[in-house]
Image (cartoon, rainbow, N blue to C red; front, side, top):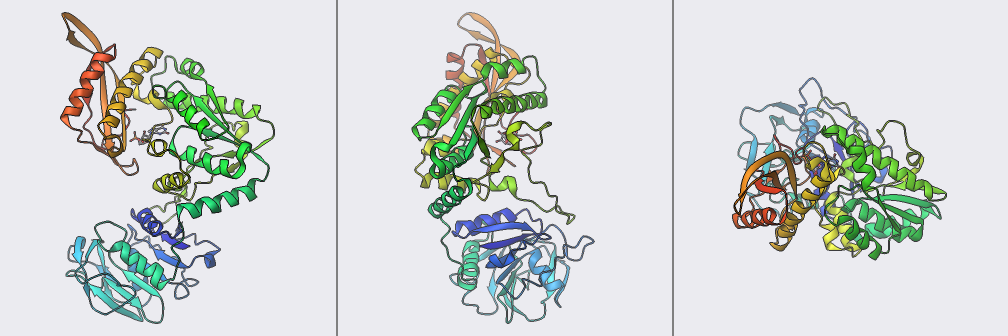
Length: 507
Ligand code: XMP
């Protein structure tokens, strides 16, 4: 496996994704927390950073146990770091070094530049520049503005590049990573979804033995794939609970429950809609709604978990982005592993031992693992859906009638996206029930009814998002269908705000 030392660059996760795309396993660790089992890593990548090696907050780890002993690829800040502290020189750059540039080779390096041709486009993003290479450094490539764009250290498998191989604008970036990892570091490209499934099932079997495990299914991709892996490992000892909070999409509870049963899962559907809606009655503040739903979920789940005798483990569908500790710009590890346990007064099921079979995977890898277990494409391709469900898409307070209206509107929108083959082109879509009535006319009647907003966004991780340019004909047809079919709605609008400054959800 590969160790990626994170100096806080916004691109660090992208490095990990590219490495994984090469079917090589890697882990990200903060620069100041080098794992004690560093021998198990066959190669090291140093990431970029928002910091400067000349600044006040220099991120300065001791690499003496690694440098020269293992193949190392230093990217951007990493390259400057190696230069600055090993006999070279880094200074503020006086030309613009941001954006596209083209590589000019200075010295042949067959392995490092294999299948990459002169003039290949690379992406630069830095404000300092390397003025002088470190001791033992040999220049490999330059661009028009950056003389020291790539170098190696003689006598070591240490390579450094000023550009970012992990971003798509670096046309041969993946090839370069492959050259370094496969040709120079001699890693095997054997980390595939099938291999992951086999290995994980073996580990789970050994770890869980005959113990009973409880897992909360949400209908989403992560919990479903986690359940399938555990099912393969321990079969009937996996007890799945699927809670209907009354805020799911139309027919979702029954449809998904059937689907889970079809997959052979030992699943219990718990319809707690009434409990949730009762607890939410009269609450209109978004955070209060979220808290109420979170607390109620724990209550319901805890009750159910108690019905299972001698359960020892709680399984969760936590994925890698939830786990990665990122480094703050000031150099201290911000150490924010997202906590699932930050609720006041730990309920009993939180005292169970936790098993998280997906915690090394990115979202797209979870989907690939699911596909390799022949899971349903529709289930694996589902849009993200928030835990509080329709509650945060009904602005203001909730009533059963409002939930019904929004379920109908949402169903028309989502079904049309499917029938127009747009569903898979959109990252997330849904409808929002606005707390306004507006005047309309239907037949000879004046109406004074609800307005709904439709929202469809493109995104990769939900952190940023853009509204989708859906065809006018689609919007026209969907709007007509909603107003004609859903009683209580006489106006449809389309949300054309991006995130930031808006968010995906309205609450
Ligand atoms: P925002 O609205 O913050 O949403 O742009 C980003 C992504 O997160 C989802 N989301 C939630 N998911 N509980 C969840 O499980 C929540 O309270 C919650 N709020 C937002 C949202 O659907 C989008 O995918």
